Image (cartoon, rainbow, N blue to C red):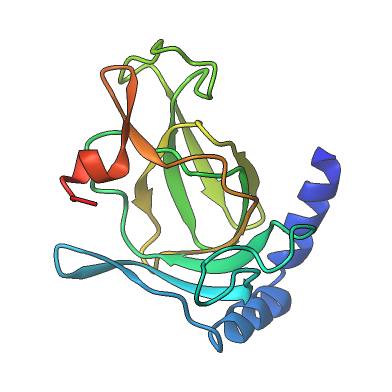
Length: 178
């Protein structure tokens, strides 16, 4: 299966195809993420399976969503974070440096210690699986940011931050009341 993703990433990142994916997605904007008054990430839908009102998938048989992300700045949070679903990222333009926790995943049981993870360069044509419970952080992005094709599956839980070897739910970490 990995070879299929590598071929898909190579094709999607060809200049004409990447330009088309980016341009097409910009017809269906999602909300931007703004931190400290600056845009951190712009996002657009390529395929949105969610009902606008309920925010639940319209069809059980199709739990995936596909977006284009323009990551303009590195993550400024002190701790690594995970996502609430399994996902796949394909780098369409630009590059980033990512810190990834070792052995992170639902089975981790607090074994991560900061500084012992790995750094990975992700550049045009690369693809990576991002599993639920896999903690990471983008530490730098190329000058013009990085465009990614982001494919996510069904929700598996909440996202959070890895603090002292334990997952802290995002609202608690950011001090947001429900």
